[in-house]
Length: 299
Image (tube, rainbow, N blue to C red):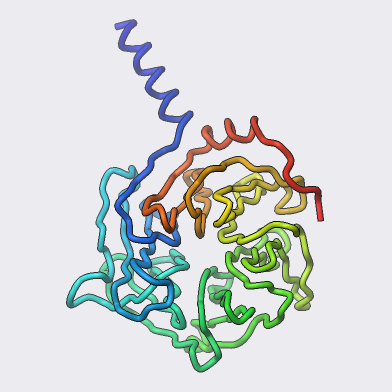
């Protein structure tokens, strides 16, 4: 009996002190999101060139335990909804919202039914990337190629407007709303900055001097997590981007649009070119933080 108890303690320690799980065999996974309702995960698979309209992209679903993977949950097979190169992914209530080159597509996450297609090409969209929602349910979408952030209002028949349009956006990529100020936070691909857009539209720089930033999210304590695609690094910044930036993960292959599940306290990181996804639990992240070293001074 004592041996059994020792084994269980060791097992639980190993489980909580390492990655929650790693899964492979994805096709250019760009974004990963956790459903706050049931704990399941969704992954967008570009499955080819980032701008090809060949209908080969798809969304995967992973069970809450990480044990079961439905590879082609939506798209990727004949007779299903067409996805070309899906990237940014958002779980909003009972829907899945995904950016797809110049269009935002919305699906029912239960029935997998295709609900809405919002074409942003007439508004100048070229390379839609991340997607996030505000408290009122409006959607915000970054376009990395044209330095623009669009707003889509479902309450006004999915009306499209331009929320921000400026070279200062530096190739906007990952988006998240600051839970305190309600300002939109942006990481930039071309200029390597972390920005915050105030309610009056003014753009504030929180961090600079970085490069190829992709994903952004925060945990319950207000620590910001940011991925550096080319360097294969994940940064953590306290005080919602205003503290000292440190590297907590390195040596990763093309970490793309990460997200943080505040319900499960897990960091979700897709590897675009590695064909895999990593899920790090709270304990493994804290272990990484103990080895942190300052990377950049405050901007």
